[in-house]
Image 1 (cartoon, rainbow, N blue to C red):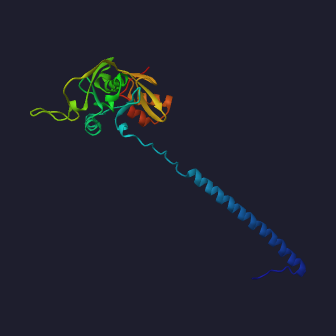
Image 2: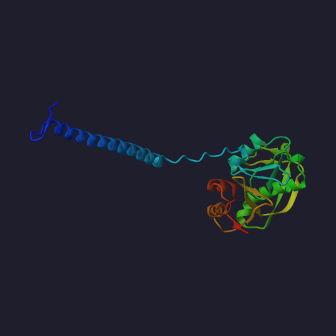
Image 3: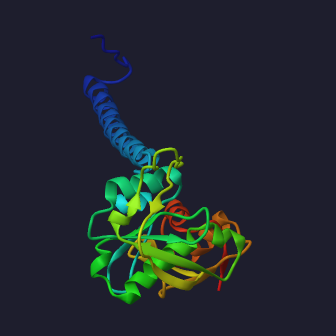
Length: 242
């Protein structure tokens, strides 16, 4: 290492100059280290801000949420198909011997089952009939009420008789039926916890109307909260809020 000396100064004076320089350099080194540490912290902070937001974990849905559904007054589960395919799946895979099958008395209606319906009272059967009525062509036709009937599972035939044709999601009913005359075309919507749900009594009343389903879902989400997709799954095909 080469050391430059000022010949006009004494050895002690030159040594003093180098000591002063060393102190300044030490201060600069400390400042540089501090600046480096600040930069590291700022960088880490920036990385935290830029970290992608974790998507909210979607709740686990029950099997019945693939269909239309509601919980009756006394806690029974009523489930209705969404289309011909799900009508057939509901009846063939989910309906058990202690259930009841419901159908609105109109062509183009959801197959509806009341789980353990043979143990349910009149109010719960009325609630299931309401679900069957709402998810029928009567709703889009805008009528005020429709007749609905129920039968036991063994009365529902999923295969056509010889020489006859039975379309997908269609069934043949045999034997005596229980009728629910003039079942009103109205349903109520509310948020059960974080789950958009339907009821025959609780929430905001929905009747057949001209408001699009998507707009209806947005209005209900704005009032109650919940996920828009879940509202879309729960609601009938449009209607008016009352």
